[in-house]
Image 1 (cartoon, rainbow, N blue to C red):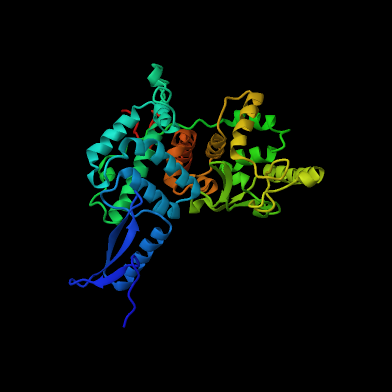
Image 2 (tube, one colour):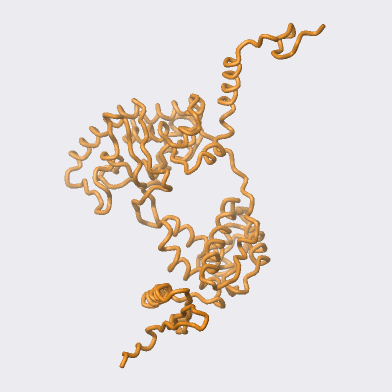
Length: 426
């Protein structure tokens, strides 16, 4: 006699139409249990879905249902789906968008009752809302304390177009998973048009400003870092995650293999932003010389630190740019350092990321082609490079037109009017 399954263990049955279905007890968001069904064309497919369902139940993750509140579904989606697919930094930003902006406004809507009109109205109101008031709702303060508008003093801070677009993208991604799980028939966020994003023109340092900044940084203990940012266009997290094993000073090359990010209160080493970001960059001779000096200075610094040189356990060995105690440099501290350097150099205040734009602009001004700049910066597509730096390509385009004149030379049928290809007047 076959052994009976235990209660809640799940069952797999073949249907009359040839498909298979399985059932198991799962948790609801409110903590109660309910029987949930999964379907598939083969027994193995259903068994795999059933195992996944049971594993979530063992972890205490509630199963999604079409009638659950959107706020509950977002919690489920972030914990069960997004956490397995997204990088920690991306997951953190998704959680912030869902907790601060989406759940307070749409969280009480049932998943299967959410309409395109709801999403469209939410985005319109969110776009024109006070940012401090939106965040204040989550701060746990009283109603009178949680908004600046409550006291009649609106700060007039509105979400940027990028933030509105990002909120829409998070909602669209969550609902798309609900479609895959057959909880809803359509993704209503996908129906609503994505808010237009006006690309803000980047304002990099020009050649004179870049030289002034590097001159002011000459005596800084991380001078090699600032020179690398301007010369190679590395991202902030990429330059802080470099190790001496990634740099070949004899060949004048460095390899980008990881990055460093601050996620909540921890410094986390991870993989670069995209597959294209893993790249090898040729170093200018000035960078090679600066790195050699920095390596010797780091050795002396380590020797003088003695027992106080205590790298953290989870950092890779041989970090190039560390604190005086050998620990990873907090990416946020670079912002403060750059503020001081800009003030000392008497140049306008820029972000660390603007040094990346400065590198691209200087390369374009020197006639370097867009493909080479794309590979240097680690952009995923050449379209991104061209769109971002189209406004600084005027000089390059003019030079290209002049070179075309040189290539074509003097036209044989040039008339007395001096216009090539146009016969002289009779």
